[in-house]
Length: 107
Image 1 (cartoon, rainbow, N blue to C red):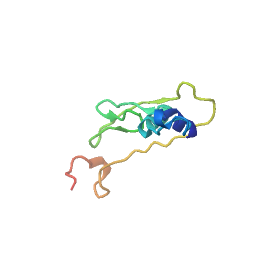
Image 2 (image 1 turned 180 degrees about the horizontal axis):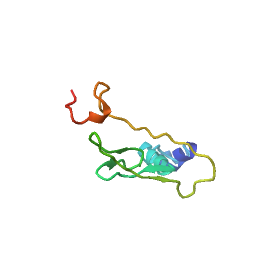
Image 3 (image 1 turned 90 degrees about the horizontal axis):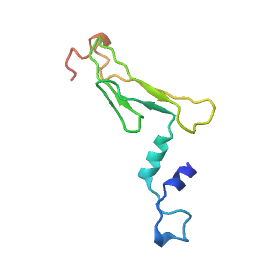
Image 4 (image 1 turned 180 degrees about the vertical axis):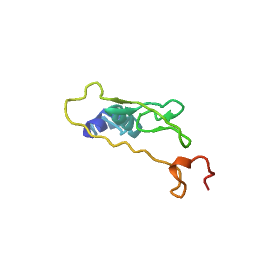
């Protein structure tokens, strides 16, 4: 994290000699951090994916199937063991059976 903070700081002439690098740029820091991710969810056909690849969305009706892909690995990734959790959620309330979700209006 320290390296991300230092790399994303923006130099400001009035701070020269007072701080090591400059003013913290949180937006750049977050973009740099997500760019270093080793797993990216790609946009599913008919769906969406975030710019960072940290989230993807696809809406399906009951009985439909969907498919999406992910990229694993990145340039400069060191050898080792990596872990990830992929969460799949439904907006169908528990009172409606999953095989009929989407066929009934959701209140």
